[in-house]
Image 1: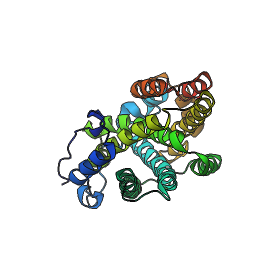
Image 2: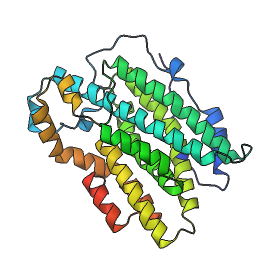
Image 3: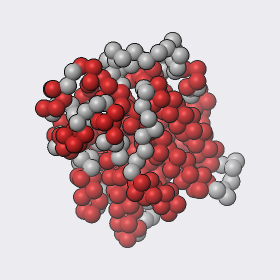
Length: 304
């Protein structure tokens, strides 16, 4: 049985000038080893969901009402695995961007040391998500080839506030989802533990991303703001729309064409995404990253 994981959010603490130092201290006191914390040995219990049903892309549709309870549970397990796989894909991008950002900088600087600590966290998270998806009996879901190539370009070209703000968007959306899942007793216990670990450790990552974004935009020109806001919005759109692949419907034994059609029109799911991002959008607005062109992408992704 995994031990209880504290729910304290580092990002809710007052921001101090020595953010990196405080995050390093927090990491030393409150970090987890998924190999020990997660119950990998108990067989999958199919009486549980893989995620809170309300977060399913089909919840609230006519198709959802027609599904048996077993089909609903299988669908949420596949959707949870898809979200985890997308998380792995983006965490690999994140790690490369952060390494590129600190390359050549003073390794005795606490901000560099925190960046390396965050990269180590993300390595553990990626392995944890991969093992979780396998235990959910899901294949290795991957974003579409075009999305993978766009990610390759983004991790190579994005810099400064664009990199950190995009990290923040991806992690904020996951954070709200996983807070619901980790508290939901309908969700299979090992997934709740995985979400618990991710929420606690990602709260530090999000705090650092907010701090870095603001620091790097302090003296940004109007043109730089416009370009970076556009880059962050496009990256956000690609990430969010790639979280659940249509392959999950086939894996769950559903009519893929109908499932995709109803998921795209699902106002409940769109509302869930919008409500999860209200705080994030306030932050982006305060950082001057909500420009008119960028708003189009956030609206298309149902983030605003």
